[in-house]
Length: 332
Image (cartoon, rainbow, N blue to C red; front, top):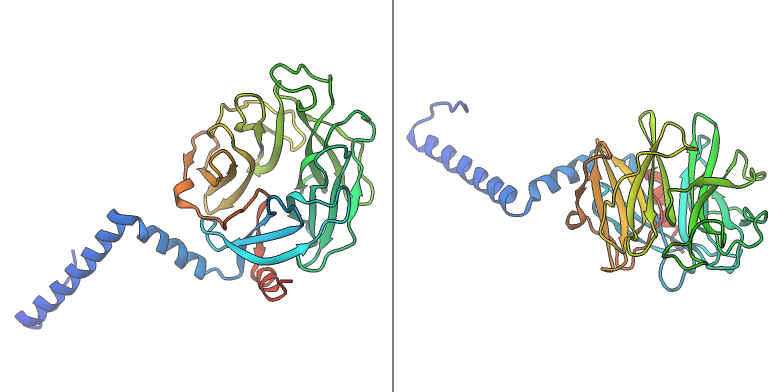
């Protein structure tokens, strides 16, 4: 109960009117549009200016290089103008840019370097996301000469193993039952590891769930690991998750579909106590998101998030504020 000092009748009425006005505004905000919760997120973000969220992305149909979006709350994303790395390896395209930061602070980028006829992916490094090393083409599928493609490489730092794990999707015709899949579009996930980006282990099968799978995204949730991925079978083509006690699998407890059909390119970001799983709903031509804390129950928050027009899938990750400032100040 609120205590009000006695300053006479008129003073008391003024205080009551002010209080009523405040309560009315708050009530409208909460019931009408949810702006109170949005404002709370914005205030929390403003109070933590030393960290931000970045999202690596590219543009259709140009595929001409690395772009970024940024956010202070993980819900509302703003475009960073400019192109920060033009692809010079493979077929000179860049799709699905995936970035992680190593324990030494160096950022490592991998990307899809060609649609077909390419047995590797592109890789480059940077301390600030503005100035990049020479690009290299990493030929990971040369031991499988009939490989059709190397799509959507995703990079993950394995702190326990002190190594980087890179996962991608490839089709090796005839290796697995096609079922409803075209013979040259029946994917499984493969991986390689590296400690120095000079030597890479031979490729190995990473995930065979019994269906065509692409767009694998690996994350650590406490003591377990979660593999968010796209079930690429017809007519599914939606997002699922699987679990393991090791970042290299084996992967079990595969979920049912978490999204509608025609969704792909998932990545996840920890925001507070929640994991936000972003995905490209290419059928609707929008970018969507799910929210979860336990990877058992999921809430679709697509109506609560916003992205720049034309945003395409990459990786969302946390970075320091000076990194964002450098991107904004040094945009090409």
